[in-house]
Length: 93
Image (tube, rainbow, N blue to C red; front, side, top):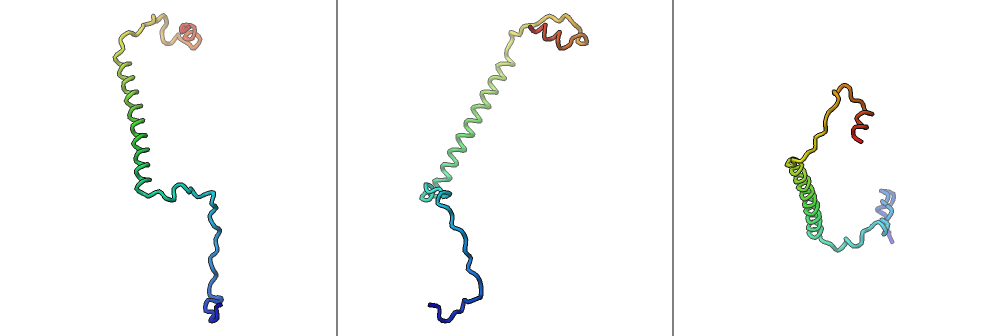
């Protein structure tokens, strides 16, 4: 087979373990990079849209709270120095 034996004792062959077939995502083998980039962009756009809608909703609720005029006032019977936790809790109930 190898009559000249040129490679004998010059180096060792690199032998590595093969990748387990369970770790390969077989569905992604035929997908092009452009398709993956489009899907990533769509997912990112959806995340940004959800965040924008959420922040807009918080902003609208804050604006409604600022515009509210029907606050109820409680009469203050104590100085601030005389109020302790139990008195405040009793007043709250």
